[in-house]
Image (cartoon, rainbow, N blue to C red; front, side):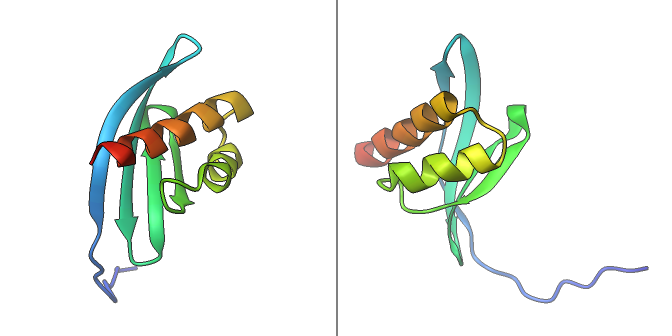
Amino acid sequence: MEFKIETIFEAKVMFEFNVAVGGWTYLVIYGKHINGGFCCVPNWKWGCEMSNPDEVAYNRDKLIECGASEEVANEIAKAIQCMSERE
């Protein structure tokens, strides 16, 4: 079996940061791609689609879907919003 790259899209990392929640550290990578936003938390093996940084409730729910607890997901989503306001 061989792979075939079908389409190439532009993607952009908007910011990467560490956030501490409940004594644990989370490396957060947030960016934009053709379908909207994305978030990766590689040290916890989480990755998901996201909305705009100010859509905290939606982004929290997406982080919960990929394995984050409600509290951690909420704090990461709020940190993403905060980082976007710094730009």
